[in-house]
Image (tube, rainbow, N blue to C red; front, side, top):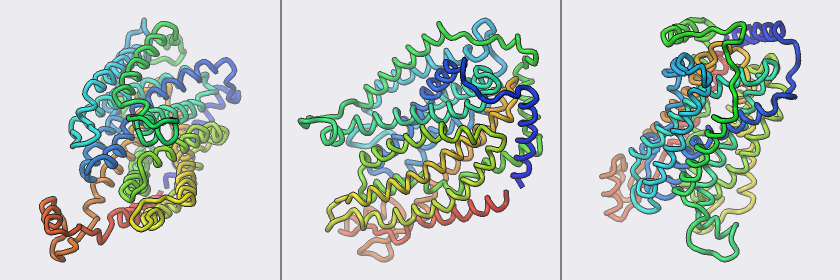
Length: 490
């Protein structure tokens, strides 16, 4: 159903591109713009990586429920809501400064200031021992992600005009590769380099107390980086005057929102939006909960982060390797094929999580064998390849069908729907796991440990709350079943 509509859109866009510019992609003379976009997307990825590191820190250091994790996951919602203010970004700007720089400069200065402010209180909000303040953490990271989402609107739009028309397909490469680098930097430093165990084991000759960095120092450093880089861009990067374009159209705020409504009324866009909103349901549980389940099973956060850091090599290289195919006329065909393969591969996570406690426990002592790491890396490696092929393909498709005259509204609408499809499924998956999990007190068959009081009563009587049905397995089966239904329908 969606395949035919997508193919028609791709064919039409391909025809338009061929009519307007028949030359093949060639970055000669465009390399400086390519690397600038790569830098901007890297800066955008840092707050995303920082946000993604918090759930692992919470799960490993504190008694945190999946309901608490669901609350913190709201911090990532700005990327799914940015469509609400995208028309403002497209319509309001100072011509003397530049259409995109008018927003990029103040937003990135605010991001730097935000990180400096967060550094001041982070040790109290996220202590090594004690109860973290989940609500305040969520609010602070919500603000940083709101600014990052606004920067995303600006950079996505600027990419359509910063690169030459025949190189626009490379915008998705900058996006995916840059974000991957930024996410890696945002997650590796707070977890690995701040870990005393990791630093003493791998980076030091003589063990000492503390890691190489702290969360506070990481936030301070990146706050200064944002301010310095933004200053350099403000001084040295000139933006093309969009008024010189023969097809330039300036719309006011009301006209931009009207344009958004007109986009929504297109039948093919409606079908595409419904598909994108539900596309991630099939992977929601495995993508969101697997790492947390492994931490609960006994795999250390340091080991998971080391492996996940290695996966960033895949995230960085896949866009570069697949650019040849995803920049072609039918990137969505690649997306759909990869979706089917990822759904099948998601079932391997059930086996991974189920056998992990058996494989890493030696008479009650955590002792992880080398072959377990090999299995874990293989499963995650294949999953990352499929995920990023899908990601690059759908972004390439958006770049092809978006009108550069209304880039901030058009491409942001498509990206927002995609992000919303990932965000709502992630939040629901975290919230549902506890509901699908059933426990029973070892000393009282009538105590199902359904509340904190019942759990405390069981433990006070000398018992343990034993899991009889793990919500991860049931949730994975339900989500993958929905995913196959989605693939068959669309």
